[in-house]
Image (cartoon, rainbow over all chains, first blue to last red; front, side):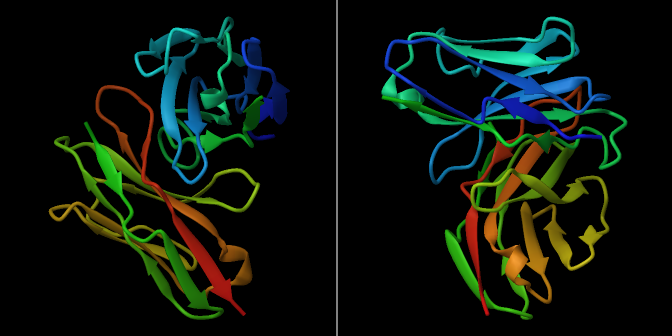
Length: 117
Length: 116
């Protein structure tokens, strides 16, 4: 169990550019979640996958945000035409019904910090 | 919609003392989980403790324990024998457990300071 990993850890981009973040969940976890965390706030849920199926996407912040999990393993979160308001920490978490910490306990990665200039 | 409220933006405690962090939540569901997560400065979110709503017994993990009051929708975290390494942001979170998984709803967090 190597934990949830996210890449890159930091991303600086100019307004209007597209960015993509990657999340690799714990290997036996079939559920994967994306959150956004702004300064001084708790994480805000964005979207959720069970295997390759995206079961919840209504809380993606706008149509500029999209996520994929093509083979039910790693996931990507893309933000198109970035805006300064997109600057935040983007967190990924994974879980399993059979997780040792209890069913569907979510384990978080270190996050990707996005700065939009 | 579910909400989670942490009314203490910041708490301070002397090393080796006990501190309690408060959390209240609002939900119309009966099947759910509650969590406390710890987020040290510039480090990732770590699970501290978990409570299933159907369990009457309060969860404990070493120096960490909760006081779960389902009727009052209250879920406080007690940290005994506070250590310098406990300094962090602590987030209370709610998760619905009926009908499949979903994202967690977090409070705004409590910044815990440990004074040596």
